[in-house]
Length: 294
Image: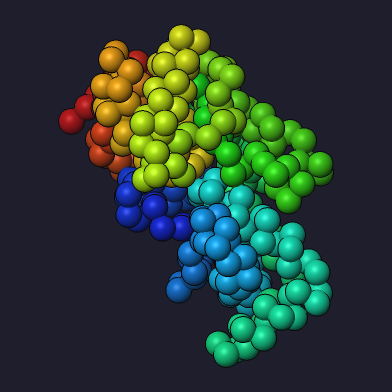
């Protein structure tokens, strides 16, 4: 199984622990990742608000590069997935795609409209399959209660994200949590915004959102939270101390990236997974699943 790998910006920037954990988990499942060298930023939805054509052109450039590689794209960021999916849908219009290709022509690229874009979560749940994930587990995460946090971009708008054809995607994160032996600590806020998009324009509101989601997850019994979106991780983990101060109460909820949770169950070393690099310590999670910290 081979993919054109689109790691995005944050997995090597704000969350550098994500990139190596993805590679380690992919290797265990025999997923071959051929990184799209020189790919453009998706625009994160922000650029599209100002100039949709520019945003779509940047994504079409990446699609054309993957097309030239002859591979589907694997993303590891919910935001990248959502933005790419919406661009992909708009680029199905042949006339619009022709306009975009006029821009790409300067680089000798052309997007023909054939690429498939899949988040790692869907690759694990659909291509690998939850039964194969379960079979690969060597360290069952028994007794660990995990709150799923999808965030915004991987669940809506549902049309471009393929939920009509794949309705099981609405519970894909829960299925992976169960496959690694953990218990799902379900809570209402799992598909809501983490607050990251408004962090720089309304920090108090963003902090209230972080506190609400994390405290609500704890009220539902969560020992930790897992997210397929590094931007959500940046807010829920990186801003958690500030959110706790704003809420005038401790939170202390570890936030894991999806491949870190899966990697733990596969028996991967916590240092390889970068579990010591978080703002909110993951020590309680490691102790609960029997990992010796060194």
